[in-house]
Length: 619
Image 1 (spheres, helix red, strand yellow):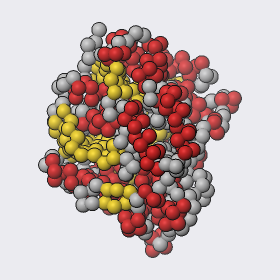
Image 2: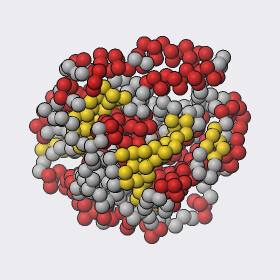
Image 3: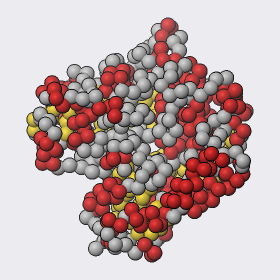
Image 4: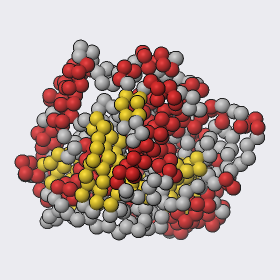
């Protein structure tokens, strides 16, 4: 029986997940949404727990600890103090929240015990542990990193009380040096603007980031003057008179509306230039505050390595600016930086921080080729070839089984014809990004690829940018980046020699008019400001995806592919071959590679075609 098996769990807010750490090694991690097909599923992650235990060959009684990613009593304290502080405002919100807390969330130990009862016996009194929310984030950032020591910065909406924490990691210890507390929060500031521009809070923040380059930051100073007071070291306080999230049911209020001269945009309403300018403005504000925080942390710690986690760390635009700022030499960002990653951090916090066990660090890299603890973030379920064939046959799919080399050749044929390829290989990714295991791929040289993938495959807003996957050794030939970015969490510009010179008329376009103007040799992944959210691909962590990119480069002279997640709007990333086939048949994906099975759309039975994307709530 393993003596050092620890299961981490995050649940009951959004993006529930489970993670298994065995003798200090991260062996499995997955979000519950992938199994239930309910995006951002907040429920108890029963399926993710079952997967993690099965992957480790364990039962519940084999575990040394089960660890929850936050402390419910502290969170309840914050909730009560907030309502009391704003009373009598917020009565309706209070009445909605209290029954759920008193029935379920407050008594987490009994809830967890009941939820895990079917997995076997467990010593709940001695082996159930709770870790504070930002301690979980910090642990998820530092312990899997390739660094012996590093500065650690976590930023999100809110945990119990903390919204931002800064500290240091050294060997197997993390010391948090300072914190900023609720209601002052960078995550909630950004979410307020997400709400105001018509996107869904806790899921649409990346849309706001993608919208920003279409605008100009004309409201930047207004935000600094009216909404947030920021000190030189990056510490900040929000002007709460403009916000409603403390005690209300919305993020902003009428005073906020008056500041920008219009009411909140309704979801799916037309995006106007003012919305793009607002997005650009809050992104500029976030960038500046994060730079002040990281510069201050570099001065105070003297460290040259920085680890990031928390939902704000998924803002790859800010991350890229931190890297280019030069106050840190190396940056490592937890690929599951949001609440899902808290499950992993909680388990690691107990293994290293509480139990004092040493870390096994390979070092020498920014975290690739097995040199970090995340294994490329390929920590989810995989399927054998026989399992794939059995599932495809059961659902009436028509497929051909090919050798490894022939499969890659067929896929490159599809891509070279500027068609969309579904790519389902190996272990599913942990975190919000598809990294070449559950991906939809395309030719980045095609000027039509972005609109085709957005409108006919993903069924999502036309402005949304796509990320490039690039062979690691070729990244600096195509992008202004001189290091690895394995988790698609850094933004950098396309190199100048690959850009297309714009005409004067094209330079003078505004907003969405900019969308269909090719800007480089790889227009499908070049955003309107010449930037790209880059994933470097490595033979060590994903050999089959590396082989595909290598053959595409050999055939087409380009080591880059469009990589977007294998799902439609409102749907979680696909988990099983059945999920992948359903998505394939409900979209205009032209071909599909699952394991060594190759499927073409024209070869499928008409009865399997569907419009299933309408089953999902818009994100």
